[in-house]
Length: 122
Image 1: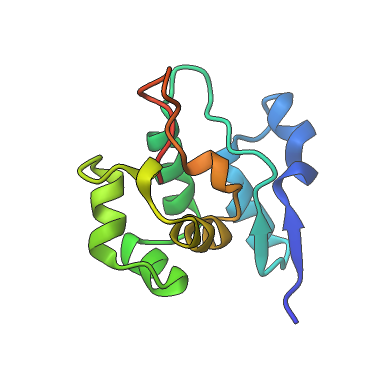
Image 2: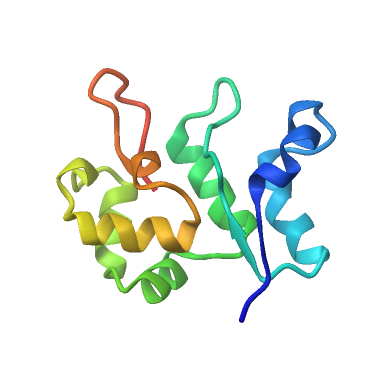
């Protein structure tokens, strides 16, 4: 059994500026937690969700290759979603669920908004 924590546990520190969302994975690891679930995946003002998700993945020491391996989604698909060469909104629900599980976010956080072309993606 793995011991985990939700990013919401750090919400007060993030909200007051004492920590950023990007700092959360390292702090959780430092405190001995093996799993981190993101209760929200909202980027800081002026940062696209795509860039924010990449920062979080990097902060968690998770490469595209590792994300592919842990999720069971092909590395090429991960790359194509991130580069927007493949429409993540048209991905199968199972694919989205696998990626979201590894990233610790909701499936909805991976989807691009029809009205906001800069929102979404892994």
